[in-house]
Image (cartoon, rainbow, N blue to C red; front, side, top):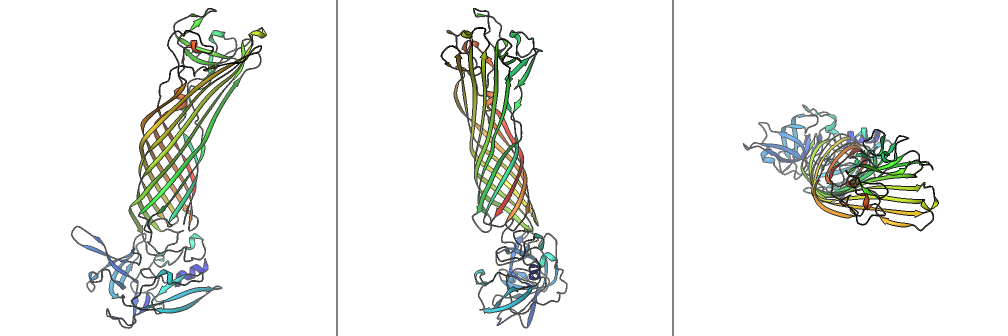
Length: 588
């Protein structure tokens, strides 16, 4: 830190950069400009027209060797900047105004051509806590100094015009701290500023580096999955006909009848990309998101006597009554017994899962970018103040998987062994939603010193392929006989079992905000919020039809009387996910 601070005070960077004190340069064998003796310049660079209004008026700026504007120039009556456009000059000033957060403004007093000037490289190294300077071989006139020609032994390297750096201030100049900051920022706590960590101000706008990767931990919540009442119970003493039947005061819902899978979910997301040009105008980026499989489980069991009462409710569209199974209209609420004292004992379980994943690839095009107060050699830890807007265009894939499985394990409590049996019954509903589409978006980034803020908006438009798989089965094992298996459970029967697919138009808008703090020259920590919405998806719980024709229940009757229910009909809904993101952004 101390050594870096000493270097900040003494070093002078290549052309177009600033020193806290003006640089004294001696023109050698000059053939242009009125130059004699020592000249004091507050800045060196090329004059460019940086702005022109509708009336033809122009504004001039001074640019460095990378083409970045480092100061605004104002003419006086004694100077005509038009004569120096695209030419390398040294500028003497009547005043230099330090406007915090903006480019310095130089009121030009005199302009001197430097295009034919020669120079020398001075290398500054550290020996213990002391500085030692070594002037190397002079550079021939009319030759640009390439970065590869700088020789370093681990310390910072600077280019100066032949001649000493003067300590006296320049009359009328108001130079703030950031004007003269040459390399690094002590507040970053990164130690001395080596050549790789330090870069010329304005060569990029925003975070530096050709490539980046950002892994993130996600703590998100998603929209729940709606399910009908799946398990009920009744008060002790309820009759067998009324046990677990919806709509009665004696019946309570144990599971279902509301949204499930509403708890927080863990996941991860990784973004990676790179620039296709050093000015960060065009780039590419990819991402992958996985919201881990979230499971919700419910279990209810009775004792060996069949207490408490447990049932699975449904709407009976073809009720029968009596030992002969005579039809008993009208259609009404009914239930299948899971446990009832002296009749049947058992256990019912419900397992529900959901999983979300997404991937994308896009091109990045920079629409506009500004660096405010860009008048120093910044390092990658302290990015100064900048603002940029990028347009995004690419491909989006997203997949949402749901499953809902209801299973019963029942034992009849008949008085005779010959009438007793064990029942294993299951209903399974699974859905998969796959989105493929084009994604458009914008990303606004701004930064101030070590802090950064990103606001992201994206909209994907494309096709959603919805797939629903329904299956069910029953296995009956008599205590004194051979097991028999049948297709169908209770809610999944021959009338709706199968695999169904349809394609629908869908859209996925997404909003995001990320706050970043620079930890090292290449790494920053991030915290953000993301909200996404997905139209037209099929959820497993909503594909359940609770209208049942008991004639289909295993072992089914023949012939079946009445409509074949349950039936399958695609039922769509929307899906949203939102939550917090914690990550690290690494660039190199």
